[in-house]
Length: 273
Length: 311
Image (cartoon, rainbow over all chains, first blue to last red; front, side, top):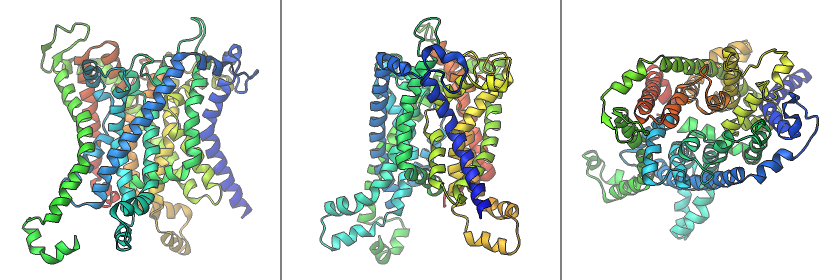
């Protein structure tokens, strides 16, 4: 028994270190004093907050952070609403074209974003959507709809919809039946889907780097890929590391709080979609 | 629905819809319409537009010289060595990373599934690479391996050269593939875990009683039963890896011909050289490659895939 515990303990340890080490390294790098950035040490010789102070004084970063947060939240909100409506129909109603919608969603899940970057770039410039929030929100919600529809319809199929009728028999109005019975049952699935959609939008780089050009709409991944050094002779390593940690914090918090849900969401969509 | 079936089963077969079924269809279409319209408008229309642009001489630096050139752009791309080189790089990165991910992802899935303690810790730590911004992951690995940017890896391994320098083709691949594997193994593992949870425990117990070793139980029971999950995971990861852009772009700092992927080639042609015609031809070719990979998977393993989807 002790040997088994030891075996699993080491397996857990290996997974933990493999998963966390690169994050730990970039954290240490971000905490290095700017003069020691290039020393090749894992553990900083001198700890400092200089890199963090630096990026928060640059509007390039603070603007990008603002854009990232709002664009990801708005895209998530719209995608989840549209996907909930479609998933409800797919899970509960009988209609021709259901397979067509699921097939289209699957096709888009496999679609290479780079294939439409050129046309979108051209269209957005003509429509005045280039370098705007909306110009990024539209592709983000499109590319997250398939995942959202699959995950939500898997969750919706599990809801005991008979409860709605039971509530009606007990004298609830349709509105009450929905808000008091169905909505609380559907909420976990909707919430899980929202997390997955948010992670996608927060993560994207292809669209961000192609469809924006200024701090007006540039998101953090695009902004840090173009960080200039403080001077011509200085590399922006420290700023990039600090900015990287800042955008990683929300992800770490979400993972810590909702680990169970994220795992359930990803596996539900895969098996039952 | 039940009253419909009782009252008029014969009618339904003749496709005469009851009032209720018609209302249900209408509601369903209304609910699906917004999502369907958005998906089509933002993917089907642009890809059609890309096909149209790929047949033009469309260079944004010379907007007035827009003329119909037929398949000339495709000939330009397909007869250029660069396209084939980049296709080779992309294929190499895809095959090696997906193969490594399958092995490591299976191990991780087994650990997640079987661990007798610390399951929450394992799942949480595995989700960090999944959730982290790809650009951040790529910077983390690039900085760690780059001697010029203060990386500790070359120092620890005692390298006299910089593994991220463009002269070190082999090591460039190592960095890109490690980044890709680190970032996406958890996703592979979660898809496999979904399959593992469906394997009946009694079956494994029975085999154990009959004297099957752990190795035999894995290969003779678990693997055949989760084959559909393995195929879905492979399909998704292969298509995803083939589109690789973020990590190559960051690790190569925008231009390292050793590891340039087809997506980066398309990006450079479209947004740096502003050549919409040739760029769109590349975009369409990438789209066709992805469609071909998906088609081969579905054709080769179609039954297993639809089994997985519960059809």
